[in-house]
Amino acid sequence: MKQENTRHVLDRRQFLMRTGAAAAMLGFFPSVLRAQAQTAPKASEVVIGKDPRLLVHNTRTGVLETPLPLLREHKITPKELFFVRNNQVLAGGKTLEALPLAGWIIEIVGLVRRPARFEATELKKLPQQEVTMVLQCSGNGRSFYAKYAKKTSGTQWKHGGMGQTVWKGPKLKDVLEYFKVEVYEQAAKYLTANGRDLPSGTKPDFEHSLPWTDPYVRDNAILAIEMNGEPIPAVHGGPVRLVVPGYYGTMNVKWIGTLRFEAHETYNYNHTVRYRVPLYPVEPGKFSKSDYNFVNSRPSWHQKIKSVIFSPLDGETVKAGTVKVSGVAWNDGVVPIDQVEVSIDRGKTWQTAKLQAPDSPFGWTHWETYVALSAGEREIWVRAIDKLGRTQPLNGGIDWNPSGYEWNGADRITVKVS
Image (cartoon, rainbow, N blue to C red; front, side):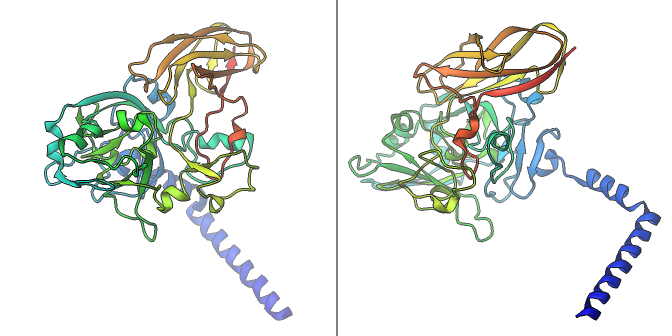
């Protein structure tokens, strides 16, 4: 045993000497760091056509975040700047180019009297519904849980897993009527959407169920064929995407191939284990995804109320005196945003911001106000309140969940006042 330990020490010493000498000769560590920085892929290399300034979280499927300085520049987020969250990838789908409607087949099956199977070009014959809405990853803001509770699994999004876009296509209820699809309303409680993306490795295909009993699904869901006035880019779910305003992005299923009306939510892994949150508060770290079931948790459906400060930015230096603070707020569109409040004394007092009416119930409500800041390091907090009285918790960590979904804590920034 002693000889083996001695041999191990010698081998390790020789290894360190050799690698140290090599590092000295080649300038190893600085050059490696430089090489890594030079070879780190840009967003435009991960998804063809994207702005290279987007943050790259995942190169394999394509997960890109929009930095706030870029997001705040546009009322409608351009496709080049719009975030990307792909669980799986459609073959050839990591591009802003559009795929043709011709040859794309969609099926509507399940608890219906007359199933339908049609080419996507048929959707252009129906009345078109246009909706301006916030599309947001359910994990948007996930990184902030670590500040208040415990770091969660998944992409550590800040604020940029969202954007405001305009979607257009026929309402789903009009599609059903056009193809004479009669749903067994007493039995069909859920609409399950499945896209044509390819399963990744051993993971199951991606699909989600939405409550067909929810009027917002029945009345507002569309089979979108346009985004911002153009055919939907492949990476954003084109040629056909199920769009349900007010619901989290994961439920707006891309590359629609099949719609099933069912009596029960799908048992698909992505719906029963992933994209769920506990019904009741859980202690950080004491609850895992494997603990989820249909009794103790729910899917990430309706978006929670939320607000974000666009200006000034966190860490920015501003001049002492009167400072303009502005940003956006939104919810699931069930009722309007009623108030946005700003605090500069860590929540002791609040002042009401001026609101600008959104383009639709599902879009951003822009807000602004002016605050008096003295020299030093200062915090600015913001929270939104809607007409149902729903608001943002000052401690967003109370809604901690193992996957870090549905963050909606009051937004906080720190500025340096000179």
